[in-house]
Picture 1: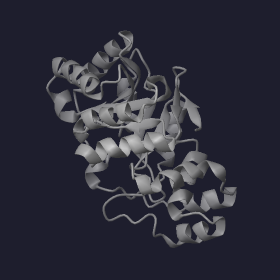
Picture 2 (picture 1 turned 180 degrees about the vertical axis):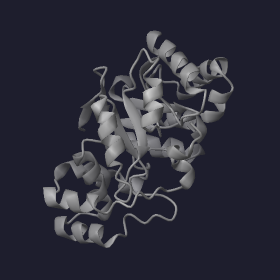
Picture 3 (picture 1 turned 180 degrees about the horizontal axis):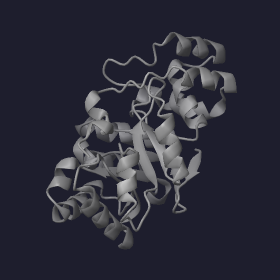
Picture 4 (picture 1 turned 90 degrees about the horizontal axis):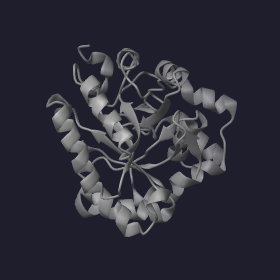
Length: 275
């Protein structure tokens, strides 16, 4: 499994499994099966309401904790309640996951007037050794500019929506200029966005004798990004196989040219936030 070095020296597996929408025994089983298939990077969030099941899936796998990279995120409603609630929520996440520590803790969305107190609590947990790395999700340049005026620890990751119809060239370049790694969520699009069915991706799938989904994931990792496609057991082997081939520079550019700045949901646009 390829890894990427974060700005604090820690390593993150370049491809992981996302658990959004997974609940109950399905979440538990899918996480266990993902780890058994070879994945070592598991992504969840307080807002997904499945941290306990993710933790159970990790325990069921029998893999040593040090071999895994576990991410969770502080929910927006918790941020609005203040630092004490954020602190309590992190304690609860640690208890639900039941794996000793969190490898990466993210602010799930930028919330006006709530990022600073949340970030400072997260820094406390790094100091206590209960969280190894901290970062953000869905932050644009002005959100990062503000955070960096007071952060004692620089974010290691910004997790944002990235797929061939939303290439995020500007945001990615800006994050990378700050030494912040970009992690792509929603690599195949969501809702009404049909990334996989695009004729160009179907054509490239035939050319490389891969699936269109593999072409998309290869395009992402070849941009030196991290990604977390949904944890679907039928696709585990397929997703891991993306490290066995490369796209030509011309094909990389052709996929990049598909950009339409098309988000899966207008509410997912951090630019629409009132600050």
